[in-house]
Length: 570
Image (cartoon, rainbow, N blue to C red):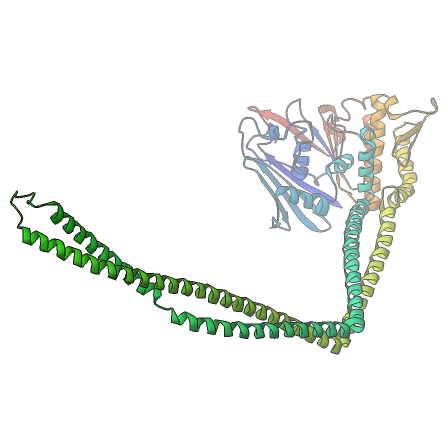
């Protein structure tokens, strides 16, 4: 049971910096009075704001801050649940949200939204909608049960019957089913993978058994062929080397021809220059008897001697030039032979290099084949190991099959539980069991209010109403006063259900202006007898602006306005 004890607020709505406090447990029946605008309904907004971070009336949250002071808004509510003492503190400008348990601040592990979820689901175990259906009635901001949507009606009743846990359980089971289906997909992939490995291993063993020796024989034959090819290359290289040896010896004979040819050509150039000089001298003395430079006569004997000497030297040089040309011709022939031999030797050496490359390739292939033969030989010698791998794959596959079967069985059970926990499952069955009690209580309270109709809620929480005057009625067919009686009967019923189930049972009941409008036709004394009879061990607060009710209540709480601020009258 939730026992609300005290609520305090300041700088909240029309209340100023002075702290206002109401003790919920001091008296059984309490009348809250005051003229319009004095803040007598502030307690409703303060209570829902502290617990659910939202005002009760249809106003913006920002409007809760006092418009004059504009800061330091604070609301605190104290309550007890099963022997644990709680205090919820909520502030604006600056913003603050704290929960104390037995005097110790609760560790704030997450943001305010997460803390709010803890408050509603773990501590109060009730949301705003259900709380207002049990604790508050009559305000213009209040939405009666009969004016809620079918979905919201169901939420309220599920909270009262404490069966919302089934929805949470269903959500958990749904997540488990999703996870199990994902696991099955992974297991199917693993199964296919292991099956592929198993088939490959079986084929591998078959190849070892049926083709191992044949493979070895084929590879050995290939090795023999490669050895033969390599030997042929070696023999060919030996023959080529013999040719290179012979050609090299011939080449040695004409070695140096190029150098000698260069020397002869140089000599040829010198002789040519010498012949040219002698020819010019012979021509000069033959054609000139007078010196062209100094115009003096050249001595005739001197001129003739020079002509004769030039002719003699010219003949000697011409003879030597012919011998030189013959020598040059011989060296040129030797040089051509040297070049030819060099090309042949180079070609033969290239052939040797190519053969060596072939031999290296043959040897590499031989080594690879020998390695393959050794591998096959080892595999043949270790077939037990391969059969062991095959057994491992088989065991792994059987294990996966078993795990798949287990997962599918779990999904089957979870599917059954999921179906059972759906809205039309066990929850509906529980609601069906309680509907006769609910309808009985509603009609009992209606009769106590001298309203003789037969009110029934069905499984969809739609109403069927029969009266002595009209066979079939609906909630909307009645007057506002009659609707108020139905709303009161439902409120009393919900509190009775909460008391029986101990779900959201609470000591607090606040009724706003129930005497000021729709219930004028009902006697005040009769109504007070009803709430005293119905609401046992409860603290009832009735908000009204009628001062003539003060003698009907154990306690009167007055609100007044002083200098523009609302406050409790002393």
